[in-house]
Length: 490
Image (cartoon, rainbow, N blue to C red; front, side, top):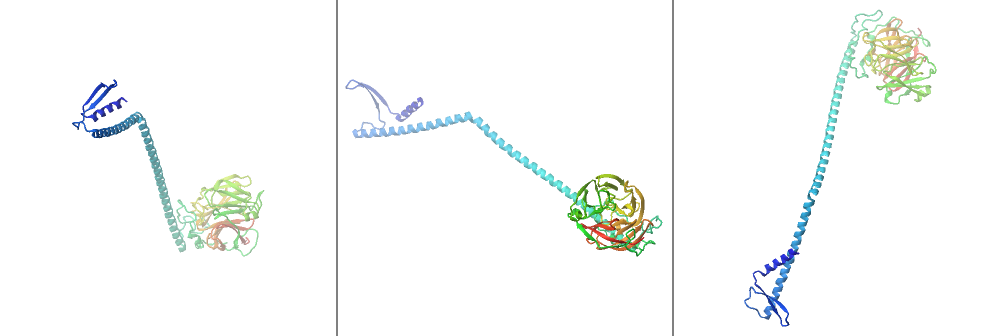
């Protein structure tokens, strides 16, 4: 309030300007004291008339009203200034804390944005690294495929040269030819067997009439007598009879078997089957009855302790005999007890693509059974790719006796043994193939044959002889088939 009074006093002084004021004190007629305040007019030299006095009074009133309005305006401006000063004072008191909080919020937002950017950058770097790894893997796969292609091209070129040489009948002479073996049959072409990557190479050698390079043995003509249920020489193979078809791609090729000398609890009707497409082949399907086999309902599934390789397995006297994967080891697995009873390496035998049959499939070691017992069909570097036969002890797997033939293993599609005679199939894919060679272990002589053999489904990956049923069992492009046989009398 003192400030307002001072302002009013100032305004009054400003409003009066330079006017002269006089204060008089006197008693009125009734004796009371009166104070008279006189102000000289700045514009009038003499007092006006009564009307003029009224006009002057009105002017003074108007000036007074104007001064009051100015005073009110000044008071309003002062109140506004006081409010502004108060607000500024409050802002100064609270300013540092609010500013700090705002800065903290801004800093937190910037940190979050930086973390998001860093996370995005890490994701981009990881994606880039993955792309680089994928690119390296693709380049490596491309390089491997190119090497495989080059290797296949070399092998095909070598096959073509071998075919041309065989057709010309110019077989090189071996350095030492055993007695009874035709000259020119021991030497074989040098195949690149170190990097065999494609086991289904369909070599044209399966179609070459190898009779041009082999001499017939003196006993090369089968006798005409027929129908003897005992041993004899093969003279006829019937049409294939299809029993059933594999359900999945793993059954494109495989092996199926019955035991020619079944041991309890198995019978001559018990059947075993193995699908051999894959890298870890261990399952053996067992069917107690022929009807179960035909319908595809196994009574048991064996899981072998070691994976097998190729389609060369057989069942004999209650045991499954097979070649261990990527090895030259033959394994005897007793089916009833589900245990491995014996293992034996075949000395020098090629394996895993060194000396397969012409259709491939890692068929380097092929087991067989005939009337005389258990056999193994293979080849070695010493034999230069020619078929080698060994008689095996069915208990210990020891080699009892060995024969070296003059038939190149990679030039035939399959082989089986009947009554001590080795027979070979000319082609796995030609519909009208032949049983083209026979080798007699008794005389150590071979001879050419032309017994018709039908590949109905054009991909025979397994052909075995069952001496109990006197039939050939075969696996032809998913299909399990049998062939009736006719043998001549010995």
